[in-house]
Length: 106
Image 1 (cartoon, rainbow, N blue to C red):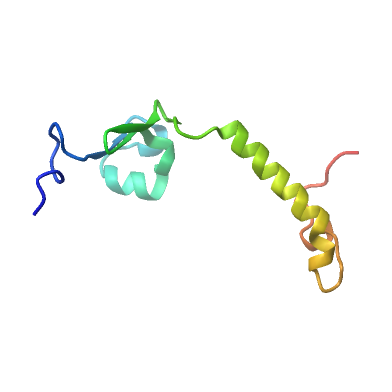
Image 2: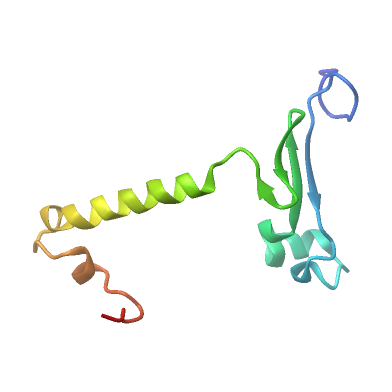
């Protein structure tokens, strides 16, 4: 019912995902959709365009500062760990509530 969606043409809105069929998780490519959904996921996505704007190029997200996002996440985690005892009914540290899977060297 709209002329600007549902087709690839100038002036139309388009969302496109290009998948690398040679990605190891996509092989063998007998059923590419099943391989993408159950095995490869984002590892096989090579390009993404949304409304004419490229968001993923050569498998890398182009609109996110991943280093900055990682730093923000690390800061938020450190704050959570510092304040965990005040939110726990037994006043346990974050390490006591969720111990590490593997011991850290000293």
